[in-house]
Image (cartoon, rainbow, N blue to C red):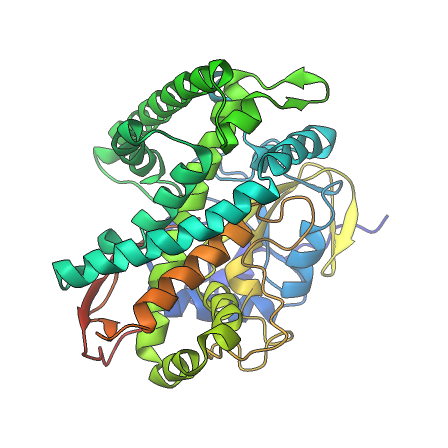
Length: 429
């Protein structure tokens, strides 16, 4: 076996602003971070970074499209367990809240994912698609009636939450409380906290998660007694490997679907609105034949915005990739935000082109067993909402700079002003 190729962290620190282990890197303007990724892609091997705080566990960053895709499709080598996010979930948290599918591998992951996939029956998905159109029409009706304001509150934050709640069968009386807990549980994921928030927020997030799962467990008990035609009923009557799903397994899946499904889709929609405002020629092309260009527009929005910036993997077996031999126990970060701008795969990678074809972006993961389970649903939501926004009179556009949330995990938008009939000259990403 070849010895691992060693590239000191200082090699990259010499290129300004490229220390991915430094929290201050993730507070840089997005353009500077993308430039740093570009410099990292030019290197021969994945760079090793060592955090100066926290666990101080070194990791190597995969930044090239080919490497991220290859690692995503080899879970036997690049494992999601013990945790795909940073920090990794503590054993006591898994015992209390259940383990998420994103942190599973092998038969455990395959069995749970198969059961969940079967719950999304063709009949339920057909009903969901019809409902998505109705939700989009109602939200845009309300946007028009209410007038200019925060686009995030008007549509992106509400669209995926309402669709998921309808599909799962969450009673209306529970939704306001669950929405608040979803926001609290995800508010500081991947965000560098300072001052008193460093001590206060983690406990708040865990309490919110616990209350949400307790509430969902109550709904699951109701569905066991009186099933309905929804995902919750399908899941509580399902089994994994011959055994019923436990309350913790159900709770962990609900949390993943609500937090991940809502947050990623709302951010993609917001970045899409920014891109369509900043590129009026692309907007005009989409409007000229929406059905023809909508799928390409959604893929290009997801590629450029990359709602999930990165996931972590743990090396389970010795393997050579990208010029480096990884050894068991090493930590690896898959940088989707870098892979989606790789000029080796995408011509003019920073350009917004809704006709780009092919468009093998990794915005839903790089394929393999952890490919995003909700990708189809997210695409339907984005197309339905943009159809309503773009194909009506009124000319909805962003009207100022977005408030972006500094995070090393997701490309999050805090707020985004919008108006009717005016162009924001500096809009876009």
